[in-house]
Image (cartoon, rainbow, N blue to C red; front, top):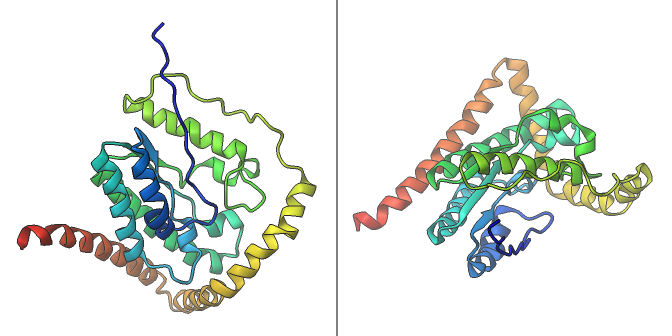
Amino acid sequence: MEPVEPVEFINLAVSGAQTRDVLERQLPAGLELRPDVVSVVVGVNDTLRCTFDIHAVAARLDTVYGAFAEQGAVLLTACLPDPGGTLGLPGVLARPLARRQRAVNAVVHALSERYGAVHLHAAEGAWLTDRAMWSADRLHPGERGHRQLAVRFHAVLAEAGLATGSAPSPEPEFPAPTTSASLWWLATAGTGWVARRCTDLLPQLLTLAADELRHRARGTSARLDLRASAAVSAALAALSVAERQPDAA
């Protein structure tokens, strides 16, 4: 048997991080480490802010992906489920968030292909509606959910010829949080999260919901989807133009 080389795992992730945080804080630290494999899975928190801008998200991810690809790291990316669905929001509130997440996922798809990333389609599947997969906040996977993602990432890495070992176990090592523990989280950290979103996202989300209702009443809801698709196309086109400019000088 060939000796197994030691592996070091470093987690730079921070709860609540947006693409701006990844670009400004985590990217410099990650580049210093010169990783062989790097996972960049982000975007949901951007959709939950009143400052959401798909052009900015695309530009930040392009810089992050490009920097790690230039170092020769294997880049892992994933499209993610919409937060309105996982939170169980009413349709009129969930649809605007779903549209934002689809926009982010479209950008991630395009940039993953551009930089040769190993990409996981994690925005669909039965695991999304399995409550056992999620933590108390319903936005982040619990241990079972993280293991499910690890199993699926291993599968795509193996398909690409980059993973030769056995797949990780999908079964959790620790018991799932009790109902009382989940309620305690909601009464403490969860309360703060709700308060922050009520002062940040909620006013804008209500405006988006009203716009959703108006278009639905007029039978023009498709225009909202077309508007979002056009914004994604413009964001990606702007990246292409920016890449060509130095050559034109």
